[in-house]
Image 1 (tube, rainbow, N blue to C red):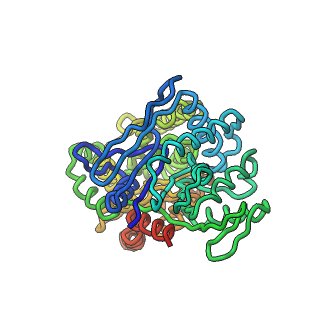
Image 2 (image 1 turned 90 degrees about the vertical axis):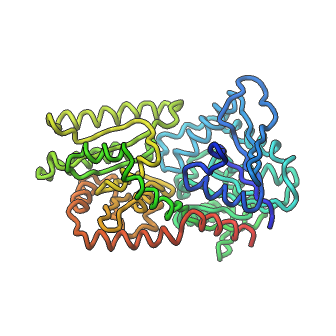
Image 3 (image 1 turned 180 degrees about the vertical axis):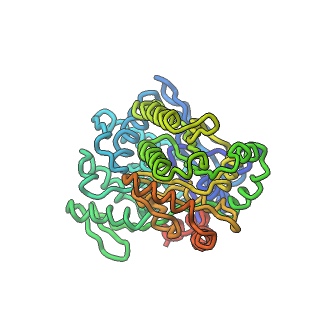
Length: 457
C-alpha cells in the first residue's frame, strides 16, 4: 500500500495523548494516514513576520509525520487573507459583489503554492499518493509537476464550484482551471459542482469531456468525480445520546422552560444566510401568534476571519438584527432569539442538537454543510426533530427527508418552520430514518475510502 501525503492549508494536530481531534474530516484523514503511514503538511497558522520562515517543523505521532511551516506576514496577507478569501471564496459562493481582485494578491497566492511545493518536495517518495485539499492550494499539483513529480495527485474541493458565467468574472480563471488539470482526480461535493466544472472547460474551449468522468485539458487527461463528505455518524449519535446528561445541556433544557427549541449553528460568514434566517424566524412568530412565548431560537455563531472587514461588519449586523427582534417581540419572561457569538464545546453542541425540535440550516450557498448531518445524527430516534435545509447546500442533494427551502424566500422559510413544529411524530420518524440510514452508509470514512480508491484506480 502506497504511503499517503495529505496537504491542506491548515493541519489538525492530534489532541494531547495522541487522540484524534474533534471533527469528522480530521478523524478520517488521520485514520487513513495512520493505516498507510504518511505525512500531513500545511501552514502552521503562524507568521514569521518579515523574516524568512524557519525550516519545516516536524512531529511524529504513530505512523504520521506532521510537517508545518510558518508564512511571512506578506504571504498571509496576499495568499490567505487576499486571493484565497477575498477572491476565490466569494466567487465560489456566487458573491461577485464581494470579490476584490488585485494582481499583487494573485501573485502572492501562486508564490505561496510554489513555496509549499518546494518545502514538500524533499519529503516525497516516488510511489507516494498525494491528496491536496481545498481552494487555497489549487496550483500545488502544477508546481510539483514542474519539478518533475509524476506521483498520483488528487484534489478535493470543500466549497462549491460555480458555473461558467460566475467563474469567468475572475481575471485569472484560466490559470485556476489549468492548475486543476494537473491533478489525476479532481473531487467535488456534488454532481452539480462537477457539472459546473465540466461545463466551464467545454464552454471556454479549454477542454473536453470524454465521458465516464474523464476530461482532457491543457494536454492532460484526468478524472473528475463527486464525493459528498460525511461525518462519523455512529460515533456522533452516541456522543449526542450521552451529552443529554451534560450539566450545560441540562441547564439549557431547564432554561427553555417547556418551549420548543429551534437551533442554528454557523461560522460567521456571509454565505450562511444568517440575516435572512433571523428575518424568517421573525416572520414565523408574527404569522403564528400562538407560538409567542412558546418557542426559542438559539443561533450559535463563532467569529470567523475577523481580519477581513466584511466579517467584522457582518458580526455587528447580526447582533443588531437579533437585538431588534428581541426588543420588538420579547417580553419580560421571553427572549425570542438567543444569539451566542463564540464557540461551544462539541459535547454541549451535540446535546443542544438533540434538544432542538428544528435544525435551521439555511446557507445561501454551501459546499456540503456538516451541521445538517450532525443535527440528523444527534436526534432521538423515538422523537426526532425536523431539519429545515437550504436547497443551495450540498447536503440537500443527499438529505431527502429535510424540508427544503429557498433561503431568499423569507415567507417560505417561515412556513417551513411552522410546518416542522406541527409535523406528526410518524412523519418525523419516517423522514429522519431515511436520512440517518444514508448517513450511516455514507459516513466520513466511506468518503475517504471512495476518493482514495478512485485516485489509485
